[in-house]
Length: 554
Image (cartoon, rainbow, N blue to C red; front, side, top):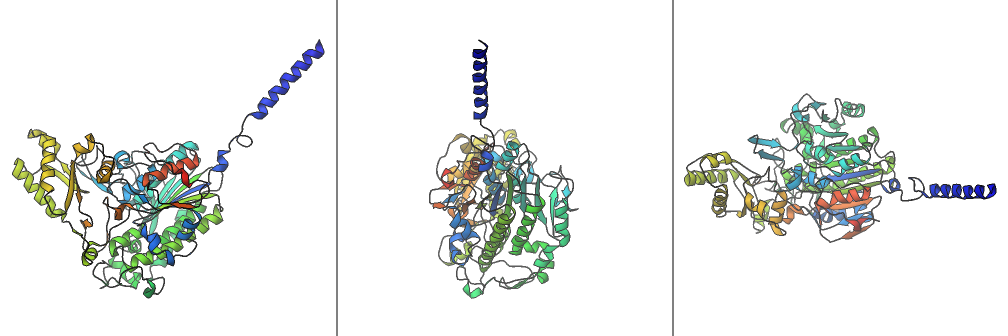
């Protein structure tokens, strides 16, 4: 009898051990998600990069920069923004949140705050203090952004052990991508300082590696001559160097190469002049490579996120236009910066251990004066004249001169308290403005806030306007200008519209988990964040409306 009991006990014990050994663990059976995730995700945003900069300058790029991303990674050739206005603040926010201004709330770089009755900046925050500068340039945070980024979700998923670091010459291009839970965001303070700074939202003092970097004053080495990287006669993908469509620098009679930055510095904002040259991008790469080491990014199996924005392309585009020799030169030089960054990632994180995506926050239109010169419809919209004309209309119609509080970002903000006091119907006033301005030159379309709230648009410009419309922050009337018509100076390029020249931007994926290929299938900027979330097996950002692009995965 004892033998039978012992035998039964032995069988039960063996079964228990077998059951224990069959349970999945993080290091044996089951899916090991930690091994699937890259050690580091790097988001690269090139400010004001049109898609055709990839193809237009392709033959002059080297093999290690843009071409490496395209030839070894996945190229989404038909990638677009799905809202307006196409500006830097909303662009960077939408890329990393997977949603549009309708939900994340960053409706422009600056906008009229209906509660505060003044214009506010997308990243300003008076409740925090500058770190690394005595100026107010560091009083910034992401507090106006309503939703999470995929970097935030990665921080939550890893119990705050995965780092997020944001870097850019521009404050908003560093702060908004990095999200609410970022370990740090760094941006450049030019003028007479030439240092990288931050804010008390992230830290009370700069880390030693940043202090050491600033002390080296590498920035001074870039105050030199800016000439073309190659013989200017080979720059056949851009227009003539001397023309009437470019701005240039104060202190130099023509917008032509070369530019002596040391000489021009004093009349062009001190160290800020570097923002309008390729050397600002070089400085960004210098700092980013230093951050890899200083922040210990990608050194363990817990995924970190690094957001890098190259801003100088935007400054140069605004100054010289999309068809300039200066634009061609900055992209040929940026190609070398991308190569330098990828090599640093190979060395410090390891080939096959990191994932990169590259895109843009918006594109840009050709200089309208240039388009007119080649018989393409274009023009310039005088916003000051428009504001006076619409105010005169309101006074003539309703006997009041203060019914409009602001006109900005192609939106009209009404004084709702005054309209109510005059016992006017808000919808009727909005419609009256629509009927008035639609007859103005260069105004192509106009819509009321009521229409944006009560009607669902699934196609066309109307869908893009609605995706950019935030009920609490946007205006009462939204108007759309004709194609290639801008409210801007007669030289240089700008952006902000719903047209293809502003919405079509690159989207390249590269590295761990990414297969080689390309597609002409339409993708949208809001697809990037859920794609990165899917790669990391984490929750999507809180306001996400995009779809993960599963066809890019291995």
